[in-house]
Amino acid sequence: MKSDNARIKELEAKIKLLEKEKEFFKLKAVAWETLVDVAEETMNISIKKKFAPKRLKS
Image 1 (cartoon, rainbow, N blue to C red):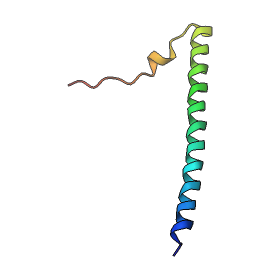
Image 2: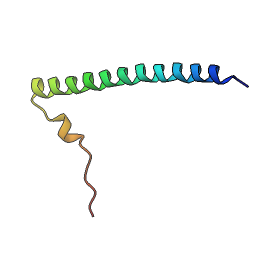
Image 3: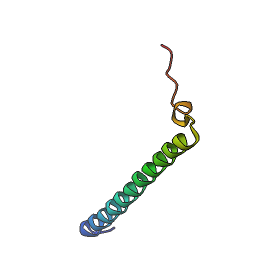
C-alpha cells in the first residue's frame, strides 16, 4: 500500500492535470462560441436559436 505522502503527491498531480484539462475545455468552448458567432454574422443565419434546448411542458 502506498504511503500517505505518495498518495497525496499522486492526488496533487491529478488535480493539476485536471485543472489544465478544464482550462483547455474552457478555451475550446470559447472558440466554438466565437465560431458560431462569426458564422451567424457572416451567413446571416441563426444557429444558436435552432439548437437551443426546448422547454418541457408542465
